[in-house]
Image 1 (cartoon, rainbow, N blue to C red):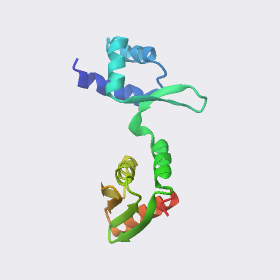
Image 2 (tube, one colour; image 1 turned 90 degrees about the vertical axis):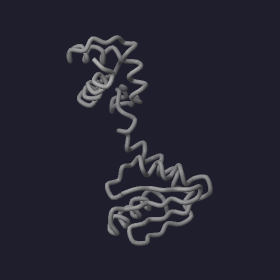
Image 3 (cartoon, rainbow, N blue to C red; image 1 turned 90 degrees about the horizontal axis):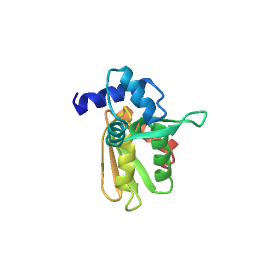
Image 4 (cartoon, helix red, strand yellow; image 1 turned 45 degrees about the horizontal axis):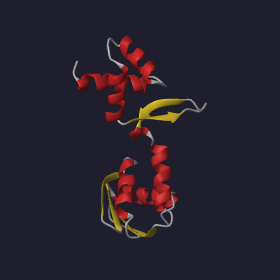
Length: 151
């Protein structure tokens, strides 16, 4: 079996199960008909950028780093607070003037949020340009960022 196929199965298993250990993942994959070693799983976990996060009981399980919108939201909140000079809207564009050095980080965090209203994000050292799908979406994005502390 090719690595891509194996990793697709791993993705499905991780999405459908709370997998707490590599050994548990090996056993679940065995049930799927995959005979893999823990060493192979370890490499796949690294390559797929799986992370362990705590559940409500404090027990950790594997998930995808991109599946953590709450963490992304808190990072975005921290980076917006005190770094946004002003925020304006013009048609479907939302422009943030930020303190020098913060543009790329804030733009990246906005992209990671995967807002449906956002068509694209561009930045330089001290500016973030958010291109919304519509004028109404630009207003919604501005409101979301304001709630997170952009004003």
